[in-house]
Length: 316
Image 1 (cartoon, rainbow, N blue to C red):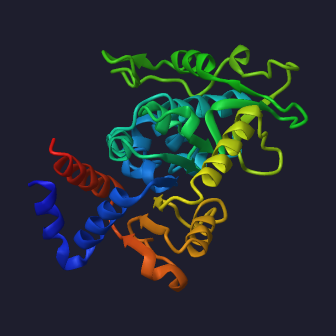
Image 2: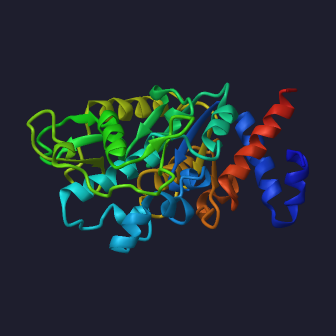
């Protein structure tokens, strides 16, 4: 079934028309501002519960009763050695592997040839893994790939890739033919690291924390501020351009970062279009409803349709 057949098959629910409208808005836009939330990564297969969780965290589930990766990040583990064994896996399987479904890579193809910028609350680095240029990305809430000191007076972050790889190997994970860590065939892995593998801050030798925005100790390092300035400059430079504010998988947890600003910027610019793709949460305020496209559907499905329509339009 090609993209047109898929779209018209869904016309009864209205989603086909919305995707067609979105493709048209994308084609007319001179600048595209993408706002991405957790729903985008979930659509790409980076789910925090179910089969994926049970496959890699079954021992934590059985011992502590943890049911998903999200809640595990807040669990009061009895030892630092166990806590950091958890985080090594959590980081690795969400930051250092490609998403199972190529939604990010297909989104990049949809945006090809457009002047665009991405602001995201996601911390899994999947945009860069898919090939998005770093200078067009602003990760507002941190990065699984970074540590910071527990003392926020140290305004630095520290790459954790080497530590993660050592910690995964120490737990008994083995690499497959693609170089990706997997549970060994005998199913024997450790949920505890040695004292020597507990990460320490390179700046002062003290304890570290994840560079994730949870409270006012979050470190906004130099890279964070440079990205914030690039995002601000992009918005200023496209002030007189026809803009599409494209929101993907943004829920209600942190609406002040993406959703509310997108609504406000659309309201202030009579030429702007606001679009949201989010299964079960696609809506817009009445004030901009006539310039909004709300697609209540899976993001991966929508992106695939947009890419097919673009390729047909470009004669590929």
